[in-house]
Image (cartoon, rainbow, N blue to C red):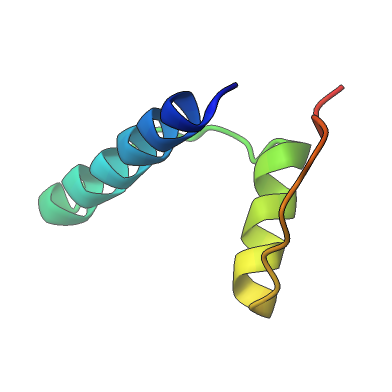
Length: 57
């Protein structure tokens, strides 16, 4: 993905989280995939590093 596509995906996730928080009714139930888990762990550790290659696959 290019930069613009990454930003659009991030925007989508932020808006989904915001809408779920406002409604108080989150029913997604999606399991955390390995790529998202890696991102969550990096954010929680305060250690976000640039990725130069795709980490999915």
